[in-house]
Length: 166
Image (cartoon, rainbow, N blue to C red):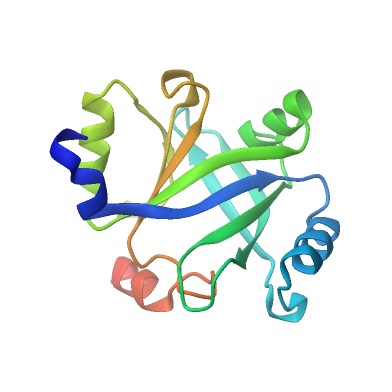
């Protein structure tokens, strides 16, 4: 990222933790962080890798500060795919680091110019979420989200999705 651009168009959004049982993980993290467990919503989503492989997983965002878009994301794979293979090989733990971008296309170009290629994107018309290959990012899976995809509760923003589907 040239000339300090990271601060201007990108910001930290969440860390992802891969787990075997999302309900147990929610119980522990919510208790430890003082989060109202009843407000944590488990969602199901699918994802397509750069190789065209689809996988399905459960996820939940635990807000770290009220009104802020800073979260811990818990991820439990449902179907075979990269997340399930990661869990099998490495066990539970840190899975990815995510940044929110106000200019996702430029952010992706910046990462690719730095030698960190795309590993997969969300299967939508508009780029909403992209994963960058950990092999080229010093072992860290990086996710770049379009700014506003998730609201401050960690739920997918209906407004962004509605715009994308139009």
